[in-house]
Structures are given as C-alpha cells and as structure tokens.
Length: 467
Picture 1 (cartoon, rainbow, N blue to C red):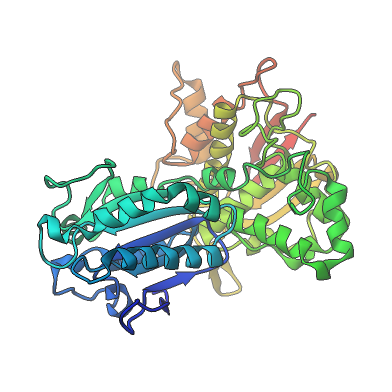
Picture 2: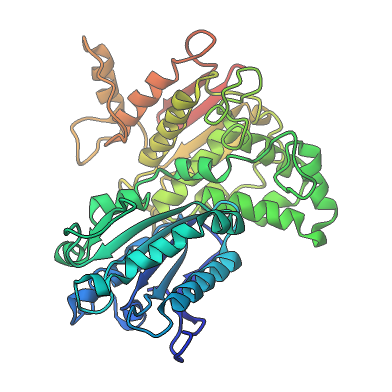
C-alpha cells in the first residue's frame, strides 16, 4: 500500500487539505476531491467502509497506484457548501491543488480529476458542492492551463452515478456503489483513466516534442548526438541526469549506470531512441524524408520494456558488458520500412507484444537451485549493432503444456493452410503475435516488405537488418 502524506491545511480547521503521494516516474496524476478524502489514509487494503458515501476511494488508491504509468495521487477535501466562506474555500482548494501539481509534475504529466458530486449525505441542490468546484475550475481553465502546462480531464463520482442531476459540462459520472459491488474499477472508468493504454502509447505521448531540430537552449532532449554527449563532460550541471531521468521515466525502467558513462553508449541510446519515439520516429512523424523507422537499437529498447513488464526487471538483458559501446549501427539498421504513423505504431506494438509473449514464463528456469522467471539466457548485438541476438531458455521445438505441438509445428501448420488469418491486437499467444508482426513487416510506404528479418532457430532469436 502506498504511503499517503498530509498536505496543507484547511482554511478554518487544522485538518489537512489533502493526502498525497508521488514518485519521479510515470505521467498519470490522479486527483480525487471528496468529503471522505481521508478514508484511503487509514483504511487497509481489505478494510470495510461503514458509509456507502466512501465507497471506491481505497479501490482507486490501490488500482491506480499499481500502474507503472502513474506518477502521483492526491485525495483532497471537498468544501462544505454550508460553510460561511464557501467560495473562498473552493478557491483555496484549487490554489492548493495547483501548488501541489507544480511541485510534482513535469512536462509529460496528464491530470485526471474526479470530483464527488454531493457533500455529506444529502442529495439535493444544496449539497451539490462538486458542481461548484468544477464550475470554479472551468472559469479559471485558461489561467490554470498556462500555469500548469498539463492537460486535465474532469469527471464526477457519486453514489447514484448517472441520476437526474445537473451536469452542465456533460462530464462522466461514475458510481461508488458499482465499484464497491464488483471490487474493481469499471471498464468505463479504466478507459477514462487511460489505464488500458499500451506502454508504447504512453511513451509516444510523453516524448512527442523530443529531439526537434529547432530546440531551445535549455531543452535537454536535443536532436544532435554531439550535444547529448557533451553532457558527459560536465555531469555536475545535471543535464545528463535530467536526460537520463526523462528517458527512464518514459520507458518505465531503470538502466544500468554503465550505459550512461561513455560517449559511444550515450550516442547509441540517443540515436536509437529517435527511431522509437520523439518527433522524428515513424510513429509520430508524417514527413517521409526525415522520419525514422524502428531500428535494431529501437528493437532492443522495446525488448527491455517488454521484459520489464513481463518479469518486473531487465536484469537478464543487462548481464554482459555495456551492450551499446560497440553498437554504432544499431540506430541505422532498420527492421521496418517507412510506414505512415498509424501503421508504424501498430508495428512497434506488434514487436513489443511478440517480445512480451516470447518472454512469458513457461517452465521456470532452474539455475543452481534457484528458479528464475526470465526466459532470456543471453542477449547481444553483433556486427556493430546490425543484428540483435537473444538466446532463450526454451526452443521452438519444445512441447508446451497448454497447447498441442511445439511453436515450430504450429507455425508450419498455419503457413501450410489455405487461409492465414491475421489475429487482432492484442495477441493471445506467441503464434498470434508472430503472425501479426509478420503481416505488418510487409507494409512499406516506398514499396513492399521490410529491410529487417526476425528469425527464430531452436532457442536463438535473431533480429537484423540488410539496410
């Protein structure tokens, strides 16, 4: 359970204005404004709430904090509409929330504000404090937007949900009783919170303005590799630390210190990132002459993200000496052809999903009496980064317990059939992931097929490029 800390003080009372938690990774910031705002502080994970008016708050705390893409959560006190200086209380609340956001946010953050509809246990217009808070926020939206530089979604939460209530801005209204009944966040709320967002979608959102050629002097996410390598010459000025933090936060993992200690490694990472995210990658750039397809270096970054998601770490992929030091071609050895943004994003996601399922735990690997979750035994670049080779702990001829035949046999049967059905995303198993990836690798803006190859022989997976 996360540790929520008291924040600020109410205007006329000694109680905290809110209870907050944050960390330095992720982009999602959840703000809940409710008169039962202290419930998530003292209620245990499996505790029962006596009042239905507090339903769902602890569930929001637990579910949203578990996501790697969540940066911060704050529960704040809904002002009492019967108070003497009610409007001043609302303004004080908004100023307090704004100050907290300025302290914890960065340029990639996205806000999600959920405001309780009613104050107390009444259901009449006199208790509609939530609508007044929303109205006040909306009236200052242009100023707040400029001050915070953060997109902010707004919604309501209440016991009754979509009752016949005033809702001038047409906001979503989520039901506390529904959350309590199913002990899960409803799918509609999950979608509103972008909880089903693919890790690569999150990366693309965060990095959309990275690596632009016309950068500002104080922007550390510069375009030219030489500018980034200069950060190594003066680590005390914090630019390298900021660049590293931005990258690791966006991809959702911590990289080894050795990767940030040589110009060769930093340069290879930087150039490979430009093929995966930022303003010039195929997934975010429409200009054919400058956009960059997924390279072998970008493929390795995707593999790292998939392994982090599947196994909770990247230890198995970082055992050798600095893999980037002799990979100067990793950013120019393209695995995919140039594709339009929609197809390029689908291709990158297909590659991620393929890695995710290849890394899925089969029979746990026994190593000197210790059972390991990772399916990777070894990983390396060869030919200066033109090829990425991953040695797996299982092979393509190995029988599986949950399906008839080996992966090799099943893929052979599929390709020998009269019809090859390309599965929808997300794929359910490795063969579906491979079929979807195979299909997308055939698409090119400039012709057909890709300059890359993905080849699984026994237990050795090779991803390379002829370009």
